[in-house]
Amino acid sequence: MCNFPGWILFNISPIYSSLLSYCSYGLMLLYFFISRNWKLNSWMLVFGIIYFIIGSLVNQTYLPESMTYVIIIIKFFVVILAGYAVVKDTTKNELFFFLLLGASSVFLEMFIYYNPIKDYGRYSGFYLNPNSLGFICMMGYGLSFALDKKWRSIGQIAFTLIGFLTFSRTFLLVWLFMNILSIRISIKNIRVLAIGLGLLISLLTYNAFLPKSNPRLEAMSNILQGKSKETKKLEEGGRNETWVRFYPPLFDKPLFGNGYGAFIRYGIGGRIGVHNAYLRIMGEAGIIPMLIILALYLLLLKGSWAVFLNQPHLFLMTFAYTLFLLTNHDYIEYGYILFFSMWLQYNIISVDKNENFLISNTLASNTLASNKSNNHT
Image 1: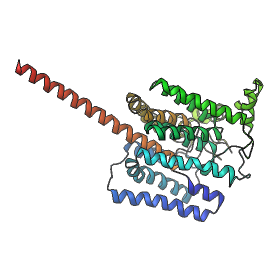
Image 2: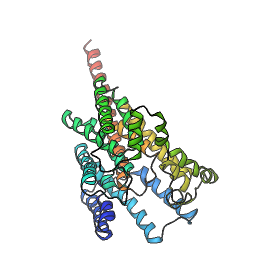
Image 3: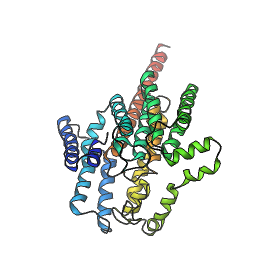
């Protein structure tokens, strides 16, 4: 969840990184066999089988070397099989702790191990990519609505500040939407939105403490000062510009796609990937696996919205997750992204079952009471 092996790979040694990575997958397998909780995630299992079979057979031009590709496939299935057992036993508090721990690594990066070689002028902590850290902050911010008042406030402030430090446009947009949606729970949540906007304005105004300036930060600061022309800098490198490059091969082979690896870096787009999980899935393996994923997330959105007032974190996190996939294509390879998908899926299904159980019991109780009343009469 903290992407520590990835950080070790970049900053220390690939040997130690590999050991930690294989250890984490090994622990998942060990937990799977010890827990004996072997109920499979049929959605992700069917998706994975179809995606890799079609992606491997239709076109092998962009496949990595054989051993690397086999490891990618093995890791994916370990996560969705053994990792699903871990997911079902992971509580909200445990997940919140690791999210906060991982997100807080941004302060180590800012003041201790800042690396000018990988210089975005933005911050990413252990996740090595500011957009990935932005995703962690989205999940943490949404999850904070499930906690008690003290930890909810801590989480909202911490994930808001750290999310702003990523200068991720996706995070800013999703954060705004989540706060607007939270007003439906209680009008008092408008204070959270106000505090967040206050943090953003303070960051734009007093940013001298940051070790490295960022073009987006400068542009937003200038906009705050009334320099409207700076909006062009915020629009540069937008995802729409990236997606357009991949539309021709996408529509050229919509049924079975262009093969695994075609829509990521060093594929059809050269050094640029598609930055959209839905387009990548369809572009590499065709419409069938994409329809499976779309059906899954539409059902999760519907199920979480039905319990929004009682369990608001589920819809907020699912909403943020589905929007994040519009801007990121590392859905297959990043274990923590798959982990969140399954955690949300399991918890939404569990809530739906509980709701149906309560409704059934209530109807049965009412019917029994009515029958007793009629008999008495």
